[in-house]
Length: 250
Image 1 (cartoon, one colour):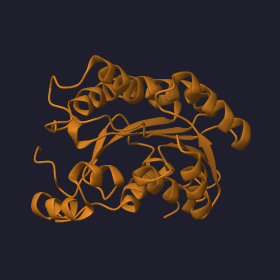
Image 2: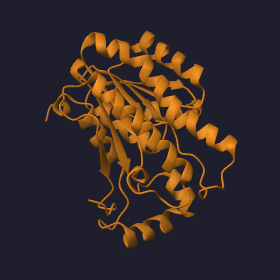
Image 3: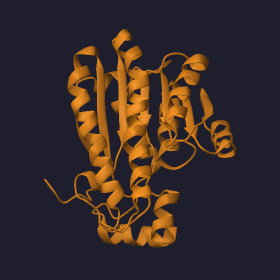
């Protein structure tokens, strides 16, 4: 299936490893010119070298709002106008409902809500001018069914969805789609850190996920690539789960 994104410029946040890397690999395989961004220059350079395709590394921190504006300008100066934005802006620390400090709340809001807002605001005028754009927000299944002990994610990812759902209606007629992915359990470093080891994460998935396994970053990347394509032009303003059947709600 031709996704129609060959030559398109994509900016993928948090792309040095994990789900972001899976997204970058899928987009590069489809012929997109991919800008990968994260905080680690060393990890970014290694990832850019390993991915086959047109991949360029840019150092950025999702919590540095001024820096995000400069990031978009730098990417467009080097690669051209951004057609595809993948907002993968991080995972806040764990905590029960009132465990996290106000400083942690503010930091989570900056990365998960304001960071997304700044990135979208920077790329949207060009997308509107060209009459084509794809924005994919990497969310969590916690936005559909709140997960115990991840209050900051439960609350702030919902705020981001509220923003993006509202915006999606305003820009749909301009040829721009905006969607969020409700992410389930994938074999990433963050999940391993939360569960204690990869073996424990895999065992828990066998017990709790109907598919009886962890998801693969490449499976996640392929969903993003489809949502970023011409083929998905009529899908917007929605939250799409990819979780092996984990969510129980209808």
